[in-house]
Length: 95
Image 1 (cartoon, rainbow, N blue to C red):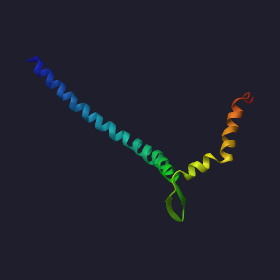
Image 2 (image 1 turned 60 degrees about the vertical axis):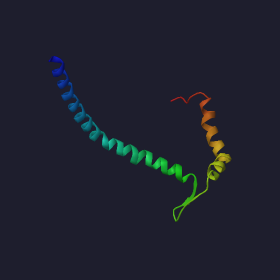
Image 3 (image 1 turned 90 degrees about the vertical axis):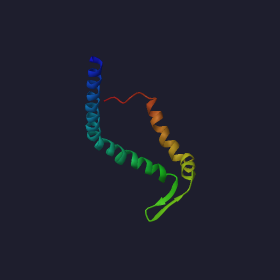
Image 4 (image 1 turned 180 degrees about the vertical axis):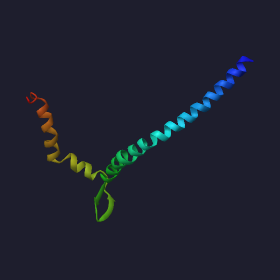
């Protein structure tokens, strides 16, 4: 008889755990909305737009990897990436 009572007690505790999980989910819902709406949404939109020719007056036109290849062959990118690397090899600035 004690094993049946133990199973009933465990089943009752599972219901309580489910209710706590629902409450935790509703408390975390604003955080998830912020993560997806404020962080991941603009990141995915900018990734999509990086593969298009886009201005604010016309709809985006898919251009493939043209933007990326033009960026990788641009001398300004290499200069801008080289400056912090050169600075990190030197002594840190004194304050």
